[in-house]
Image 1 (cartoon, rainbow, N blue to C red):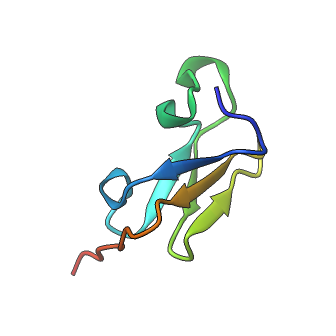
Image 2 (cartoon, rainbow, N blue to C red):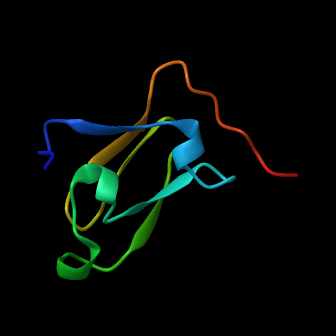
Image 3 (spheres, rainbow, N blue to C red):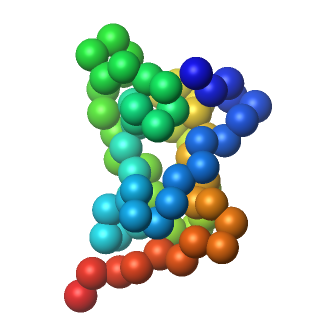
Length: 69
C-alpha cells in the first residue's frame, strides 16, 4: 500500500480519454469496498491529490496524454 509520501505512478493507458483517474484505485493498493467514495481526479497537469485520503497520483515521466475527439 502506498503512503502519502509516495505518488502512485500511472501510465497514459491507465487514464480516461480526458486524462482522469479515480480514487480509490487498485493501483494504489486499495480495496474499493472498504475505502471512501469514488472520486475522479484530473491528471491533465501531470499530478492530482485525492481530497479524501490524500493519495497523490501522477503520470509517469515520458507518458503523453491522448485526448478523445
